[in-house]
Length: 81
Image (cartoon, rainbow, N blue to C red; front, side, top):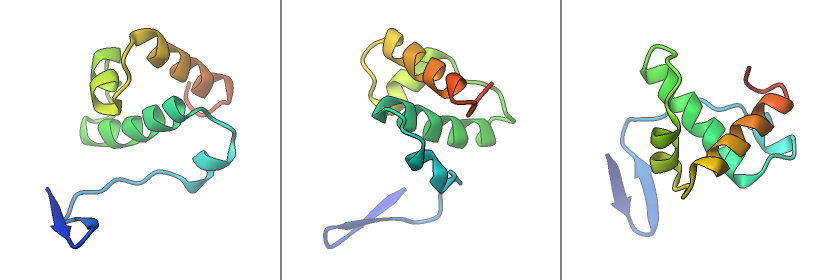
């Protein structure tokens, strides 16, 4: 859960690791959001890959083609395989 303190939101206890380098490889915003979600989801679900619908809902992406494009971009950069 997230606790509000003034105007800063602070996570009480839940977090996941995402490499800082993800912001330096020239990815689209959807690809960064998708990759961040994959880091969180796969760690919590024994490295099972989520379906496009879960990625769409979690990342606020409105269509599956945008998710496909994000995954293709991540693959083309060698970030996922």
